Image 1 (cartoon, rainbow, N blue to C red):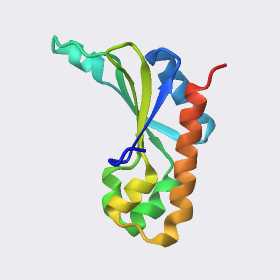
Image 2: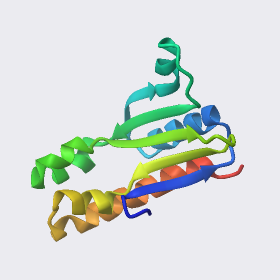
Image 3: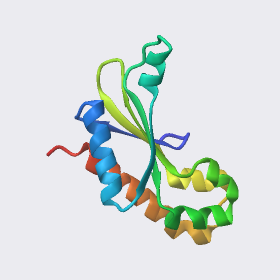
Length: 134
C-alpha cells in the first residue's frame, strides 16, 4: 500500500478481461455491483482519447453500514471502488483504496478493526481472483 492508501495490483489480462473477472469475483463474494463507469468511453464522446480506465463501484450494506454508523463521512468512500486501468506500456492494473487507510482517514473506532480487516481481506481476495493466472 502506498502512503496515500492506494493498493495497486498488476493483471496479466487485458483491461476488458480484468474488468470482467473483477465483476465476477465481486459477485462471487456476495457483493452487489452498483455501477460501472467507463471513463475512456466518456472521454471518447467528447473527442478525447484515454486508455482503458473503468471504475467498478460495489459493496454490501451489511459490511459498510456499521462503518457509516460510526463515522458517516466514510460514506464519501463507500461503496467500495476498484479502478481497472491500462498504463502507457499496455499493462493492466487494478487499484483500490485500502480499508485500513479509510478507517484512519475517517477516525473509525478501534472496535471496528475486525470489520475493516474483513473488508481489506475481501478486497485483496477479489483483486487476486481477478488477476490470477488460470
